[in-house]
Image (cartoon, rainbow, N blue to C red; front, side):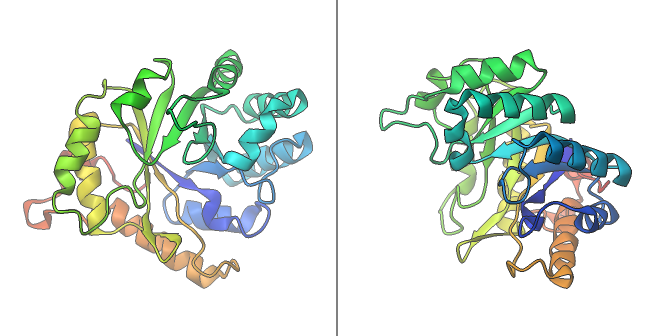
Length: 265
């Protein structure tokens, strides 16, 4: 089990050294790059090379890149697609995560553009991962078997749901092992992605029991929206505490296999 910290937390400004040092200091040596072009323009090869050198200098790795609908829609332009491919090569990305909350899904549930993107990524050493708020059988029937999934916990199951565990079972129990490559972890509150709490810990524990996904992505917003270091440090401390198992559902019983696998970096 490994944990990636999304650079969404630092996305108020272009990626630079100071927040990366904070991430490493708080036990997150691996990152998921947040593909907002104002934060990290991976279509710009010079910017890609700058970020690659910065990561190496700070002793960090960024094996995943997540891109949202506005960027994904640009990939119909061959020049943009080639720019993404160059970034995959230069950064030695393992996965490109496509945000499927809104992109490429028609009302009948079929996906557009997935095959082309999947082929380009595989050819260049990366895997396509679809970031989803929900996993269901109808969706899976429409996907190639080598397309992996990442389940976004933020708002996926509300806290007032009478049986969250049963809902997790319904979504994941029929899924082939290895298909769920990652789980994206955050609590959705007041329109922003906040650090996870006991509700997310319980869901995550059940997801681990059923699927044992290999990667967690802590993907939260800057609570101020202004890059205030003190506030960012508080968020990082909350994430580290969650990662250490402080919000686990059954603290009296100890951490168990799952939470011991989440030992902070």
